[in-house]
Image (tube, rainbow, N blue to C red; front, side, top):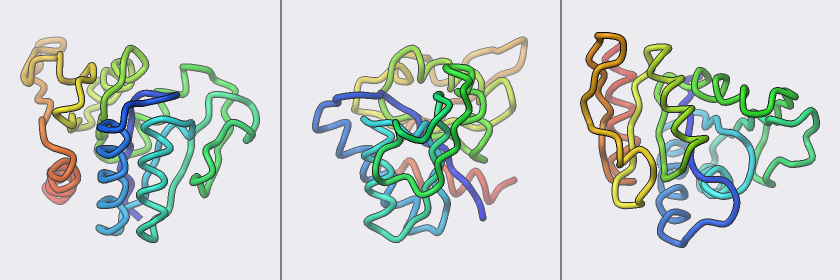
Length: 165
């Protein structure tokens, strides 16, 4: 099965961010993809809930060494005991990464995804860290493109990028 990673803010999030993450998770499931994330609350929980409400499969890659911190919509819980280092695993789990809002943790996941050649789709209109990054910039002399899209379009862009591989 093909996997799309969803990254974004943990903890309490505003309604617009929750709605965007839910839409992304819903469409990932409708398209038949597995959703991978950090397994916690916030964007991760909203995306997982959207996927579960639409018959999808979810994977939570946890920073802790236990399964207790996982949100209730995670099907497969992978404890890593890696702390923030697990962000690399989240970035690598998906063939494409979708960023929904977020801050420095999300920025690290975007950087890891780009370092490993993954395409990143940034959901616009939610005021996250990804929207503050220029859409085209150089990383070690390579031009890297962040794809900017609405929540509804983000999964469509991700699917197209996967199909083009």
